[in-house]
Length: 128
Image 1 (cartoon, rainbow, N blue to C red):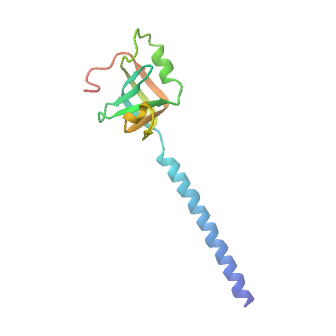
Image 2 (cartoon, one colour):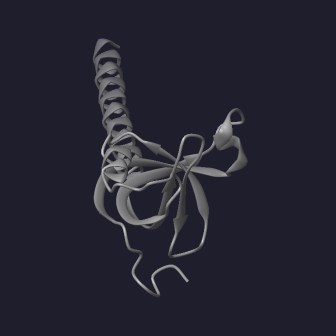
Image 3 (spheres, one colour):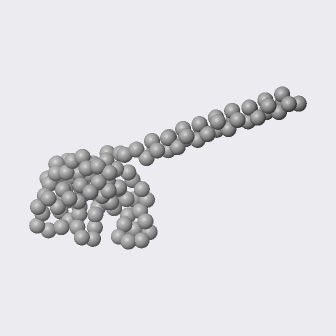
């Protein structure tokens, strides 16, 4: 009886350890799914609106700049008035927009994690 009970506890411990290991792998895989994607398109910035139009599919996004570089470098381009479009390439993630505020007008929000490129003149044929 004692031998069976010991084997039962050992087997239960092995199953529990394997289960914990699989959960760690699943968490790692979920983090990989949230990997940053490179977006290329036209960005416009002003007091009330921060938008991005994806060149690949034409989808428009609200923009949140968690890199703290996009808005800074946009303002350093020296535009006389707001909302002048520029070409950008950024690394970021796409998420659903909230239901409140100005972002609610857009289905998705682009959260910019890293600014790769920003240029004042939009290259011809880039986002037709």
